[in-house]
Image 1: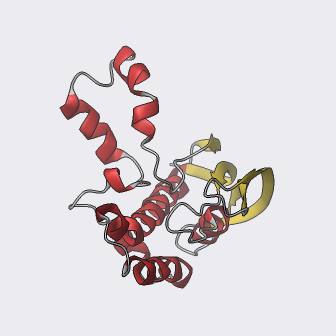
Image 2: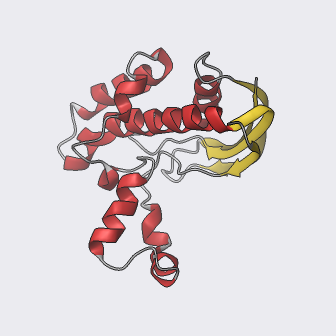
Length: 183
């Protein structure tokens, strides 16, 4: 049943940020979290976006394993981590795959309930979090949405703001609003 007309959201960005840490007080106050177990259940339902939120049982990455524009980023990270000795770096390629696999799964689910002509707006940001590897989140999200089995077209991509990278490289990264329309 196609019953939704509009979606406006800002999903997690593929970055080393545990969004549940910023909202723990609210999660407890609103009754969503009672103990560590209930917090973990919430984390396991979220889009994978950081190294502390990856689980052995995760499999969304398999949904996008054959998509070249995601594979090239994961492969670049695999090459870069060969020289790294710290533990979390080895998860970076998987985070990218799980993140976009989760977003793909989300878009497929949304495509079943949004009406033809319905619009979805996503505020997302480009990233260089993982070993300075550029991740054009908005572009990839739009391309995933346009896959035939998903059934959206990109109506517009608006630059919301331009931020200075936090790594001292001088690079700028865009935060964008990706506007999709169900075909």
